[in-house]
Image (cartoon, rainbow, N blue to C red; front, side, top):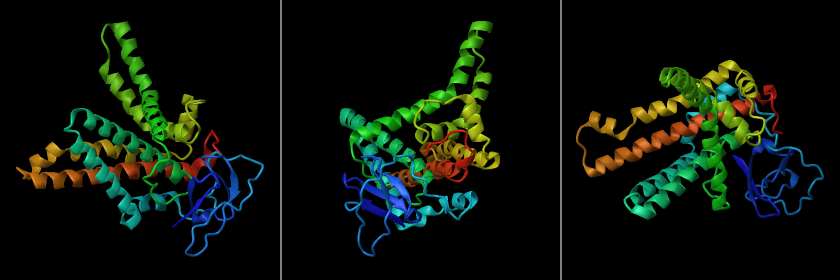
Length: 302
Protein backbone atom coordinates (compact mmCIF):
# COMPACT_ATOMS: atom_id res chain seq x y z
CA UNK A 1 0.00 0.00 0.00
CA UNK A 2 1.11 3.57 -0.63
CA UNK A 3 1.53 6.36 1.91
CA UNK A 4 -0.75 9.31 1.13
CA UNK A 5 -0.50 12.72 2.72
CA UNK A 6 -0.80 16.40 1.95
CA UNK A 7 2.07 18.85 1.48
CA UNK A 8 1.81 22.35 3.03
CA UNK A 9 1.17 23.60 -0.51
CA UNK A 10 -1.90 21.29 -0.50
CA UNK A 11 -0.48 18.96 -3.13
CA UNK A 12 -1.55 15.34 -2.66
CA UNK A 13 1.54 13.11 -2.54
CA UNK A 14 1.71 9.31 -2.72
CA UNK A 15 4.83 7.26 -1.97
CA UNK A 16 5.54 3.58 -1.27
CA UNK A 17 5.71 2.39 2.34
CA UNK A 18 9.43 1.73 1.87
CA UNK A 19 9.82 5.53 1.78
CA UNK A 20 9.26 5.94 5.55
CA UNK A 21 12.21 7.80 7.07
CA UNK A 22 13.65 8.72 3.67
CA UNK A 23 13.90 12.16 2.04
CA UNK A 24 11.61 13.08 -0.84
CA UNK A 25 10.56 16.24 -2.65
CA UNK A 26 7.17 17.69 -3.50
CA UNK A 27 6.96 18.10 -7.27
CA UNK A 28 4.62 21.09 -6.95
CA UNK A 29 6.41 23.40 -4.49
CA UNK A 30 9.86 21.75 -4.29
CA UNK A 31 9.92 21.35 -0.51
CA UNK A 32 12.23 18.58 0.76
CA UNK A 33 10.83 16.53 3.64
CA UNK A 34 11.37 13.34 5.60
CA UNK A 35 8.53 10.90 4.95
CA UNK A 36 6.72 10.18 8.25
CA UNK A 37 5.31 6.80 9.27
CA UNK A 38 1.58 6.49 8.52
CA UNK A 39 -0.81 6.71 11.45
CA UNK A 40 -3.38 3.90 11.57
CA UNK A 41 -6.70 5.08 10.18
CA UNK A 42 -5.43 8.59 9.54
CA UNK A 43 -3.95 10.39 6.51
CA UNK A 44 -0.51 11.74 7.48
CA UNK A 45 0.09 15.42 6.75
CA UNK A 46 3.17 17.52 6.25
CA UNK A 47 1.91 20.66 7.95
CA UNK A 48 4.24 20.15 10.89
CA UNK A 49 7.34 19.41 8.84
CA UNK A 50 9.97 22.09 8.36
CA UNK A 51 11.52 22.28 4.89
CA UNK A 52 15.09 21.04 4.77
CA UNK A 53 17.74 23.30 3.19
CA UNK A 54 19.07 20.96 0.51
CA UNK A 55 17.16 20.15 -2.64
CA UNK A 56 18.97 17.41 -4.48
CA UNK A 57 16.85 14.58 -5.89
CA UNK A 58 14.85 15.08 -9.07
CA UNK A 59 13.14 11.78 -8.30
CA UNK A 60 13.33 10.54 -4.70
CA UNK A 61 15.61 7.56 -4.28
CA UNK A 62 13.16 5.38 -2.38
CA UNK A 63 13.93 1.95 -3.77
CA UNK A 64 17.24 0.94 -2.19
CA UNK A 65 15.46 -1.55 0.06
CA UNK A 66 13.42 -2.98 -2.77
CA UNK A 67 13.73 -6.72 -2.19
CA UNK A 68 12.19 -8.18 -5.33
CA UNK A 69 14.22 -8.70 -8.47
CA UNK A 70 13.47 -7.13 -11.83
CA UNK A 71 12.06 -10.42 -13.05
CA UNK A 72 9.73 -10.81 -10.05
CA UNK A 73 8.48 -7.24 -10.46
CA UNK A 74 7.94 -7.76 -14.18
CA UNK A 75 6.00 -10.97 -13.54
CA UNK A 76 3.85 -9.17 -10.96
CA UNK A 77 3.00 -6.56 -13.60
CA UNK A 78 0.90 -9.16 -15.40
CA UNK A 79 -1.31 -9.77 -12.36
CA UNK A 80 -1.43 -6.29 -10.81
CA UNK A 81 -4.93 -5.87 -12.25
CA UNK A 82 -6.18 -8.43 -9.72
CA UNK A 83 -5.77 -5.69 -7.11
CA UNK A 84 -9.20 -4.01 -6.73
CA UNK A 85 -7.76 -0.48 -6.77
CA UNK A 86 -5.75 -1.11 -9.94
CA UNK A 87 -8.73 -2.75 -11.62
CA UNK A 88 -10.92 0.22 -10.63
CA UNK A 89 -8.37 2.55 -12.24
CA UNK A 90 -8.44 0.55 -15.48
CA UNK A 91 -12.23 0.50 -15.49
CA UNK A 92 -12.26 4.28 -14.96
CA UNK A 93 -9.95 4.72 -17.95
CA UNK A 94 -12.13 2.37 -19.98
CA UNK A 95 -15.28 4.33 -19.12
CA UNK A 96 -13.50 7.50 -20.27
CA UNK A 97 -12.53 5.83 -23.57
CA UNK A 98 -16.08 4.54 -24.17
CA UNK A 99 -17.49 8.01 -23.48
CA UNK A 100 -15.02 9.48 -25.99
CA UNK A 101 -16.04 6.86 -28.56
CA UNK A 102 -19.72 7.69 -28.10
CA UNK A 103 -19.03 11.43 -28.26
CA UNK A 104 -17.13 10.96 -31.54
CA UNK A 105 -20.45 10.98 -33.41
CA UNK A 106 -20.68 14.70 -32.63
CA UNK A 107 -18.57 16.78 -35.08
CA UNK A 108 -16.98 19.41 -32.79
CA UNK A 109 -17.70 18.17 -29.27
CA UNK A 110 -16.58 14.69 -30.25
CA UNK A 111 -13.23 15.99 -31.52
CA UNK A 112 -12.73 17.99 -28.32
CA UNK A 113 -13.56 15.05 -26.04
CA UNK A 114 -11.45 12.66 -28.09
CA UNK A 115 -8.44 15.02 -27.99
CA UNK A 116 -8.70 15.46 -24.22
CA UNK A 117 -9.02 11.70 -23.73
CA UNK A 118 -5.94 11.04 -25.85
CA UNK A 119 -3.92 13.68 -23.97
CA UNK A 120 -5.04 12.26 -20.63
CA UNK A 121 -4.10 8.70 -21.61
CA UNK A 122 -0.63 9.82 -22.76
CA UNK A 123 -0.10 11.67 -19.48
CA UNK A 124 -1.30 8.63 -17.53
CA UNK A 125 0.99 6.21 -19.38
CA UNK A 126 4.07 8.38 -18.87
CA UNK A 127 3.11 8.84 -15.23
CA UNK A 128 3.08 5.05 -14.90
CA UNK A 129 6.74 5.03 -15.98
CA UNK A 130 7.58 7.83 -13.55
CA UNK A 131 5.85 6.32 -10.51
CA UNK A 132 7.11 2.79 -11.11
CA UNK A 133 10.64 4.16 -11.51
CA UNK A 134 10.33 5.89 -8.10
CA UNK A 135 9.19 2.68 -6.36
CA UNK A 136 5.40 2.87 -6.58
CA UNK A 137 3.48 -0.39 -7.01
CA UNK A 138 -0.05 0.91 -7.57
CA UNK A 139 -1.30 2.61 -10.70
CA UNK A 140 -1.36 6.44 -10.67
CA UNK A 141 -4.47 8.37 -9.66
CA UNK A 142 -6.84 9.50 -12.39
CA UNK A 143 -7.08 13.10 -11.16
CA UNK A 144 -4.92 15.94 -12.48
CA UNK A 145 -4.04 19.31 -10.93
CA UNK A 146 -4.45 21.30 -14.14
CA UNK A 147 -5.42 20.67 -17.74
CA UNK A 148 -2.10 22.29 -18.73
CA UNK A 149 -0.38 19.25 -17.20
CA UNK A 150 -1.57 17.29 -20.24
CA UNK A 151 0.54 19.28 -22.70
CA UNK A 152 4.14 18.30 -21.71
CA UNK A 153 3.48 14.54 -21.95
CA UNK A 154 2.22 15.04 -25.50
CA UNK A 155 5.47 16.71 -26.59
CA UNK A 156 7.54 14.15 -24.66
CA UNK A 157 5.76 11.24 -26.29
CA UNK A 158 5.75 12.64 -29.82
CA UNK A 159 9.28 13.99 -29.47
CA UNK A 160 10.62 10.60 -28.41
CA UNK A 161 9.14 8.93 -31.48
CA UNK A 162 10.45 11.66 -33.78
CA UNK A 163 13.90 11.20 -32.24
CA UNK A 164 14.01 7.43 -32.88
CA UNK A 165 12.52 7.94 -36.35
CA UNK A 166 15.12 10.48 -37.50
CA UNK A 167 17.55 7.86 -38.94
CA UNK A 168 14.75 6.35 -41.05
CA UNK A 169 13.63 9.77 -42.27
CA UNK A 170 17.22 10.74 -43.07
CA UNK A 171 17.78 7.49 -45.00
CA UNK A 172 14.74 8.18 -47.18
CA UNK A 173 15.98 11.66 -48.03
CA UNK A 174 19.58 10.55 -48.68
CA UNK A 175 18.65 7.59 -50.90
CA UNK A 176 16.19 9.79 -52.80
CA UNK A 177 18.97 12.33 -53.44
CA UNK A 178 21.59 9.71 -54.39
CA UNK A 179 19.70 7.09 -56.41
CA UNK A 180 16.60 9.08 -57.34
CA UNK A 181 14.12 7.10 -55.24
CA UNK A 182 13.76 6.39 -51.50
CA UNK A 183 14.96 3.03 -50.19
CA UNK A 184 11.95 1.90 -48.16
CA UNK A 185 13.50 -1.39 -47.03
CA UNK A 186 16.39 0.49 -45.38
CA UNK A 187 13.92 2.91 -43.80
CA UNK A 188 11.83 0.04 -42.40
CA UNK A 189 14.95 -1.55 -40.90
CA UNK A 190 16.02 1.71 -39.27
CA UNK A 191 12.47 2.19 -37.97
CA UNK A 192 12.64 -1.18 -36.24
CA UNK A 193 16.01 -0.26 -34.73
CA UNK A 194 14.51 3.01 -33.52
CA UNK A 195 11.62 1.15 -31.89
CA UNK A 196 14.11 -1.03 -30.04
CA UNK A 197 15.79 2.03 -28.54
CA UNK A 198 12.56 3.87 -27.79
CA UNK A 199 12.31 2.62 -24.14
CA UNK A 200 15.75 4.08 -23.39
CA UNK A 201 14.80 7.35 -25.10
CA UNK A 202 11.49 7.76 -23.24
CA UNK A 203 13.27 7.04 -19.94
CA UNK A 204 15.85 9.75 -20.64
CA UNK A 205 13.12 12.21 -21.64
CA UNK A 206 10.61 11.57 -18.85
CA UNK A 207 13.03 10.90 -15.97
CA UNK A 208 16.26 12.44 -17.21
CA UNK A 209 14.78 15.91 -17.56
CA UNK A 210 13.97 16.33 -21.24
CA UNK A 211 15.79 16.16 -24.56
CA UNK A 212 18.97 17.88 -23.36
CA UNK A 213 21.96 15.56 -23.57
CA UNK A 214 20.00 12.96 -25.52
CA UNK A 215 23.01 11.75 -27.50
CA UNK A 216 22.97 8.43 -29.41
CA UNK A 217 25.86 6.98 -27.39
CA UNK A 218 23.99 7.81 -24.16
CA UNK A 219 20.91 5.95 -25.37
CA UNK A 220 22.94 2.94 -26.49
CA UNK A 221 24.78 2.77 -23.16
CA UNK A 222 21.44 2.97 -21.33
CA UNK A 223 20.14 0.02 -23.33
CA UNK A 224 23.34 -1.94 -22.69
CA UNK A 225 23.25 -1.31 -18.93
CA UNK A 226 21.52 -4.70 -18.59
CA UNK A 227 21.15 -6.17 -22.11
CA UNK A 228 18.98 -9.19 -21.31
CA UNK A 229 16.51 -7.21 -19.20
CA UNK A 230 16.38 -4.48 -21.84
CA UNK A 231 15.62 -6.98 -24.60
CA UNK A 232 12.75 -8.33 -22.51
CA UNK A 233 11.46 -4.77 -22.00
CA UNK A 234 11.63 -4.22 -25.77
CA UNK A 235 9.72 -7.46 -26.36
CA UNK A 236 6.99 -6.36 -23.95
CA UNK A 237 6.78 -2.93 -25.61
CA UNK A 238 6.65 -4.42 -29.10
CA UNK A 239 3.76 -6.67 -28.01
CA UNK A 240 1.54 -3.56 -27.96
CA UNK A 241 1.29 -3.05 -31.77
CA UNK A 242 0.94 -6.81 -32.14
CA UNK A 243 -2.06 -6.81 -29.81
CA UNK A 244 -3.49 -3.80 -31.62
CA UNK A 245 -3.42 -5.77 -34.86
CA UNK A 246 -4.66 -9.02 -33.29
CA UNK A 247 -7.47 -7.36 -31.34
CA UNK A 248 -8.60 -5.11 -34.17
CA UNK A 249 -12.40 -4.95 -34.03
CA UNK A 250 -12.80 -5.93 -37.70
CA UNK A 251 -10.60 -8.99 -37.16
CA UNK A 252 -12.55 -10.00 -34.06
CA UNK A 253 -15.88 -9.57 -35.80
CA UNK A 254 -14.67 -11.59 -38.78
CA UNK A 255 -13.68 -14.40 -36.42
CA UNK A 256 -16.93 -14.31 -34.39
CA UNK A 257 -19.29 -13.65 -37.29
CA UNK A 258 -22.21 -11.22 -37.40
CA UNK A 259 -22.84 -9.67 -33.98
CA UNK A 260 -25.74 -7.69 -32.54
CA UNK A 261 -25.25 -4.12 -31.40
CA UNK A 262 -25.03 -5.08 -27.72
CA UNK A 263 -22.57 -7.90 -28.48
CA UNK A 264 -20.45 -5.56 -30.62
CA UNK A 265 -20.38 -3.01 -27.80
CA UNK A 266 -19.37 -5.70 -25.28
CA UNK A 267 -16.60 -6.96 -27.56
CA UNK A 268 -15.38 -3.39 -28.15
CA UNK A 269 -15.18 -2.70 -24.42
CA UNK A 270 -13.45 -6.03 -23.72
CA UNK A 271 -10.92 -5.54 -26.52
CA UNK A 272 -10.24 -1.97 -25.38
CA UNK A 273 -9.73 -3.09 -21.77
CA UNK A 274 -7.25 -5.80 -22.78
CA UNK A 275 -5.37 -3.37 -25.01
CA UNK A 276 -5.25 -0.83 -22.18
CA UNK A 277 -3.82 -3.41 -19.78
CA UNK A 278 -1.14 -4.40 -22.30
CA UNK A 279 0.00 -0.79 -22.69
CA UNK A 280 0.14 -0.34 -18.90
CA UNK A 281 2.28 -3.48 -18.57
CA UNK A 282 4.65 -2.13 -21.23
CA UNK A 283 4.98 1.22 -19.44
CA UNK A 284 5.59 -0.57 -16.12
CA UNK A 285 8.35 -2.66 -17.75
CA UNK A 286 10.13 0.54 -18.83
CA UNK A 287 9.85 2.02 -15.35
CA UNK A 288 11.13 -1.21 -13.76
CA UNK A 289 14.20 -1.15 -15.97
CA UNK A 290 15.10 2.24 -14.51
CA UNK A 291 14.21 1.21 -10.95
CA UNK A 292 16.48 -1.82 -10.92
CA UNK A 293 19.39 -0.79 -13.16
CA UNK A 294 19.65 3.01 -12.87
CA UNK A 295 22.97 2.70 -11.03
CA UNK A 296 24.50 1.45 -14.30
CA UNK A 297 23.13 4.25 -16.48
CA UNK A 298 25.46 6.86 -18.05
CA UNK A 299 23.13 9.63 -16.83
CA UNK A 300 21.84 10.60 -13.40
CA UNK A 301 18.41 11.98 -12.55
CA UNK A 302 18.65 12.01 -8.74
